[in-house]
Image (cartoon, rainbow, N blue to C red):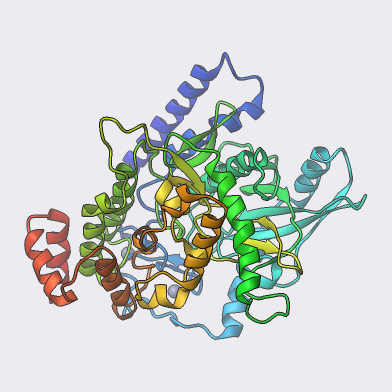
Length: 501
Ligand SMILES: [Zn+2]
Ligand SMILES: [Zn+2]
């Protein structure tokens, strides 16, 4: 086992040296290593995020739910069982907060503040600056579910910057360093691409990852970017209560203009943006909004893109890395999605021109929009995991206009906001985009079973997927039929045997 790991490391090193040798005519200095990064990083992203921490166990840790900050371990499906893992499942507020504080302290101890300030000063005309870490933790302290932020304040009063650092020191967040590196590299490229458009996004000034020594001495993977004015929009109006329909129309109108701008910049492939030889190119898809997928792709057609998404879920379910509480049901749902990609993929034909793909913010729940006091959009933030997607996914119903209650409880329908945004696009003459608002299939496809850990919560999502894709049978009947239809599927057979009492 150990020998095979050494062998793999040696092969990696040889490939890296060979890669540098191949690029030697174009390598001007060490900074050019940035542009070779995505390929390198992807080479290191393993088929499992973490190994089980229990000594002697060779299983992969469960993604998303397998990390525990109480015992600081990553656990496999067997060692997560209540008889073997006895940490409290639900933490009281004080314990939860103290765990996050400890995690952020660990992360901050890795960050070299002096190196951050030296880099920021150098990039901002030599202006002195200081780094400001919040004394609190949590959402009020600029902290996201996957990233920590600190402010960079400049002495000359010029606009502040943000240091964005993936939360890789938490077992519960469960973000492997290799994936964090790729997400940072991809987000940087995405922001650089957006700088050349009229989409209001933060300017990116620098980034670094540790895996190849391009972290400028900062000690962690990071992104340095502009701090935009405005507050995250949570659906409220000018008065602070729920936005009125008129107020929402103001938001939809500005969002429609932003979507129209994104439509002006088509790409030939589906994936996520990365630098390749100093150009921003479409590279592997940077995980998904739940952060559980290994980067995959890119793809030249939407059918391959949708198929690969469902297939990776199937692989992870079969390998005990996802949906370990109800693997057979989850497998059947993603198998169904994989077999029904033709319902959302663009249909090819001999006379058809090549498909076009468009940049999409995939975690667009509303709080990605920053607004001012008059509800004008001042910026769109958090482009991590953004991807270049087929037209129908790019401009069809998304999370920003979803009725989240309906989405999570399995009610299949357009929301009032879906219709309002589509109407706004129509009024602006964007019929190419309103034609994407045909059904909820793409939104349901990517929402999937939403990493629910209990079947009772996943069940309405599963039945909503069937309903959205035109199945009229009830779940029990459909399940029975599918088990029969796929009885020769080896992965399904393995799961069924494993789950048999
Ligand atoms: Zn534990
Ligand atoms: Zn284990």
